[in-house]
Length: 229
Ligand SMILES: *Cc1c(COP(=O)(O)O)cnc(C)c1O
Image (cartoon, rainbow, N blue to C red):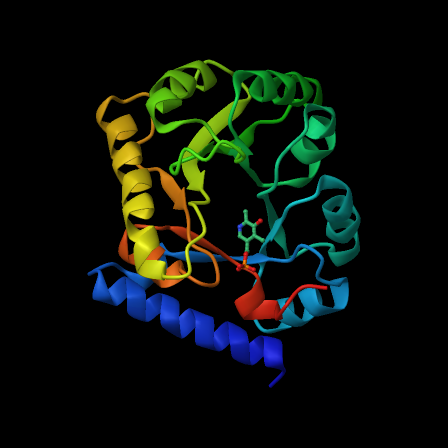
């Protein structure tokens, strides 16, 4: 077994245990293997071990890798998306997890209209209200979601967050819970026409707490691939 295969098995076990602790079906949580700055050969190793969903932060880097990896993998965009990269992003990613403004949505929708394609997106929420971070503020989420729902080529399927970093994963719990409550509010108000929203939250250091709080996707890089270059 390669180290990546061993890491993957261990992460899957921890994910399933966290789900069970919360009385959730382990099948309801998926792993996004974050492969930014990870070489294609190592991504292929993860694929050989059964992982098919990957997350990338940089459009340029990702497009190159996506083409080299080829069929069998699907990709989420989890980085900050610049408007001038909307075209390439819309072409390559199953989900763009980081939409946080009407301006970006409008650019994406325009590209998608030209490509004749519908795109799944998540809204990134700045749950910790950190000035330097991307994401819509919690109090502006419902308003943004209503505006995004009007774009014909965008389908808002979930929320994503990256809470303030904290050494102690327990300290992240209130932020994960806050994202789940925001999703419940959107569902209660029937803003998006879905009866379920994905929750993308939790990374290597805190994915178990995120799962206990309702994550349906955890984004794990270092724990799977090791330290990045
Ligand atoms: C890098 C990154 C991750 C993965 O972080 P690790 O700590 O390596 O698991 C998850 N989400 C986002 C948005 C990232 O940029």
